[in-house]
Image (cartoon, rainbow, N blue to C red; front, side, top):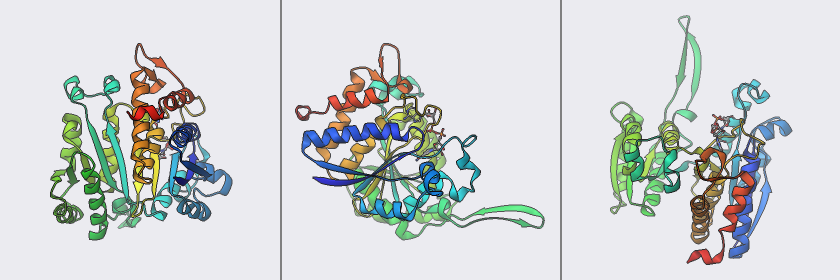
Length: 366
Ligand code: NAD
């Protein structure tokens, strides 16, 4: 298979972790006989430095011409980086919002998995961690509060800020369908999260999700209020398969879910549109505190590349091979600093990438 991959290395640890994911993709291409070509794209702080803006029209067009985009992470230290002297619409994060909108990426997938080998890092009680968990948080990405009209004005001499939360039936239906499709490939359970006891947008959300559920009789649907969901994630995370929710709730819950795994450097993510195209990136940020030190964990980015193979290219065997190689590297005791524990072998970013490559070979299919 020949695929054209846009590559946004980004800022901070971005270039280091993306290089390891490309190494793994090259290994997959060699073992399974594919051809992946890479086009480097500038976004975020790296684009501000060169182009004065976090995302140019040309970069967006080039991204659209790719079969998928693999990204590191963008942004810098808000206290020290000159990028944060700029007005909010010109900062690195604005480029990411523009890219998501420009590519119509309305569905964000964030798996939160507790690896057997990393149970010790889970901050939850032992009896909860022992049960393990493997959930997929599906967050609506281009609607809701983050994309609504906003304003700050003086009313009767007092500053008043307003943010609008809007969802249409269509926006809810398309993400709900994606959520149920993903559930069909997993344990066939969807937990739809809303605040239907207060918000009109949530009541519409619940109604449309129920309509979509009627087309998926094999999938069990339950509704959960967002405040309860925040509690259940720390009390009994094993109950969740697919969590389907709107933009702001998903932003908060997916961060909570990633923290209960105890290892942000392990968590991949994908953002999808109506087509096979997707943007794949680690869940963590650009980690300016460890950038350039060669110690960042590349596994989240490597697993994001595996998601790209699975969801954009339908290369499930190859995606499985990457996931298996990551598990084997962990089983054999290799750890980057962020997931290091007693008796294990600490390795840097590059060595972790190389070790994972070594476990990818055609015999591993058996
Ligand atoms: P962060 O995720 O970058 O860092 C939080 C902590 O996790 C840090 O201690 C960091 O060292 C550690 N960490 C993160 N990824 C790691 C990895 N792969 N290996 C080892 N340790 C890792 O969050 P932050 O410090 O709040 O944000 C830093 C910058 O990243 C900000 O500019 C923020 O806006 C940006 N950010 C970007 C994205 C994105 O590109 N999608 C997402 C979140 C934050």
